[in-house]
View (tube, rainbow, N blue to C red):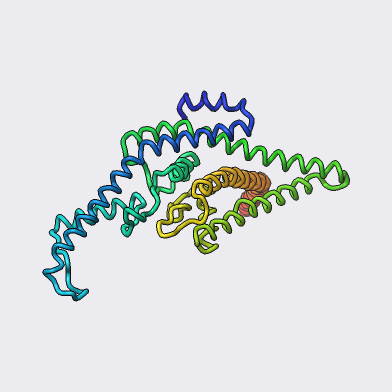
Amino acid sequence: MAPISQVMLQKLKNFGTASMLLAFLAYLVFGAAVFHTLESPAEEKMRSEFWEFKRNLSRRWLNHTHCFTSDESSPVIVLTQKELQDMLDLVFKVQAWGLHPDSTEEKSSRQRWGMDGAVGFCGAVLTTIGYGHFAPSTSAGKAFCVAYATFGIPLTALTISAIAEKMRQFSRLLARKISHMRPKWDRQSVEWSCNAGRVVVGLVVFFFIPAWVVHFAEDWTYGEAFYYVFISLSTVGFGDYVTGERIDREYSVNLLAYRVFILLWTGFGMAFLGMVFTMMSKALKKVSTKVEPMATASEQHKKVTRERIASTSTTSSSVSTITA
């Protein structure tokens, strides 16, 4: 990690969890505003090119329809190889920008680099999920993305770590209170029960409920929504399912509020999943610690057995020699 990032981490350690969360949100909004400013003009230019292309195609169609029959299977426009290639390139380009080819100037799909889209992009960068469904296209946007991620990823990691630590502290506090109220109960069993309860509640809050919300908001199956939830929180981020990006769907909720909800859920959910993975690692470490002495004892037993067999063989050979 760069020295500047290490210095920033040291300074942030003195912040409380709430302060770090506010700093993270402020950094998120700052980044979204900058990306919106840098990238939206290029998107507007691309859209204008597409509208102009469709207008020219319509004019060309009107000028040549009198040359053909009214049969729907007959061509109405003849294109050269270059014109066809240019048309395909433009269609692929606008689709990459999130503009549906059937869009018109009066009714088009949402802009990728609107403020809500920029918030979603910044969230994917800061959490390192990186869905890969769109990226900056301008040189200024790419340069800013490098600097933004350099400082933002450590801030996000520290914020998520602080949230996870608060979750662990709450679980330990709950275990202590239960042990104090029920002193006859086994303390280790109480801690194990609290950890199990924490995992169950976390699964409901960060997996099952968000999957239900996404299921209705995106019109995905519940299985697809749950798949998206896990792939996102584990930071795998294939990009095959991304919220708020359906170009064929009118969302019934405010997209900016929806993206902020997804982002906050992602941050807290990643903290929870990281905590679960840590618990699993510790459990596996305990198992390996118990298994290792058993394996060592087994090896020692085998060694002693081999030595005894060798000693017996040597003695038998000596007796046979003396007898002879």
